[in-house]
Length: 315
Image (cartoon, rainbow, N blue to C red; front, side, top):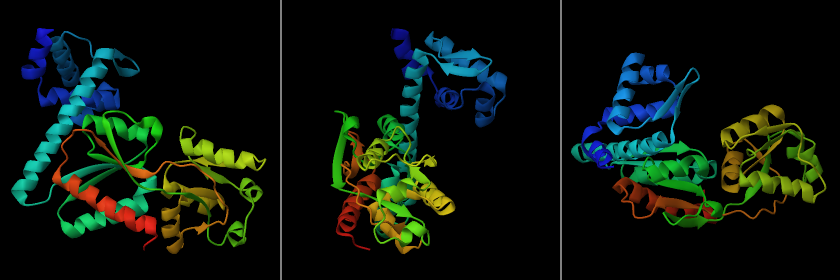
């Protein structure tokens, strides 16, 4: 495999790496050509060139599009890692030249966005207004691969034990319970102590089926001898939850700190319904042994400070 070593060290160019990543994203020659601002024949030629250099088929072509081969998946992972490091280095050089504090790339679950991350970014900006914070919202399944590839510097969200791994370094920040919410002015919001049967009778916004929280919420209904509402919306987005709760006059579930903030803003009403959920803490995940940009180190310090405020219930 000496020729592969030579190709990876000397022959592959950034344009080749951008091509395989784009093909993996779009799975279509035409859309890849549009993205790269070249013709479709040029994309085909470039792909053939990369495959000839490696002596491997990277993508299977069909009328339905392109699909990575096993070798293609490996090269795509390599390309994503190299491009992520290239972008990080470019940003650090740009920051040093301009006097800015650099850039941090954060993957965040919805539970961390409205309060914890908002406070931490505000504190970071107070220290260095020119620091750039790039935030991508999602769940662990979506964000951890990006963290491992170097496309993200850190993850903020619930530390689900099923995702623990030797290459990941975790830091728990605080425990975050869930609460049930309804739209202000809705009949159930006016009840002093709604019952679970009242919740089950209304349209309900729940996490997606693959989320561990979904199972735990369904178990709450079952413990009271009830089935969740058959009028169901599924989302992990807090904005979508607030939207559907308001539009449908239903109920939903949010992290307590976020629900309190939204309630102060008049966007929801927290229901006096006890939720007995065993939930993992909210915290930070970084890649063990990976060097972090200065802006990421500062943001982690700000996250710790914001967590202390959130846990104490401060503004």
